[in-house]
Image 1 (tube, rainbow, N blue to C red):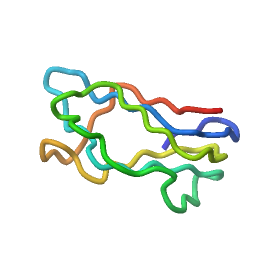
Image 2 (image 1 turned 90 degrees about the horizontal axis):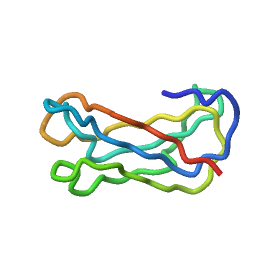
Image 3 (image 1 turned 90 degrees about the vertical axis):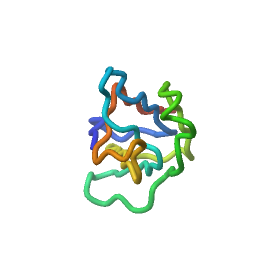
Image 4 (image 1 turned 45 degrees about the vertical axis):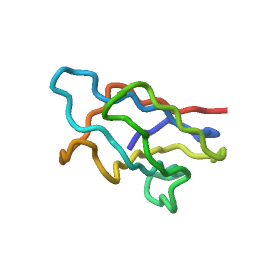
Length: 96
């Protein structure tokens, strides 16, 4: 969960998987949530998969309908390579 410090119009996110030699798993199926108070999350504003992420672990950009919120959360619904955790090198929030 990331606190952006104030309400912002959120239009998506970027995810760069762990780039280390012995990197953990990569998020494959995901759900991205936005909340105004960090407690009530509702349904994901974006969900889907990062196609071919195991063979091409590059920066992923996912746009969504613009939603106002202060908190964001990325949840890995499944992880490539059968790991029980996934690594993030960089995570960004797209705002309008």
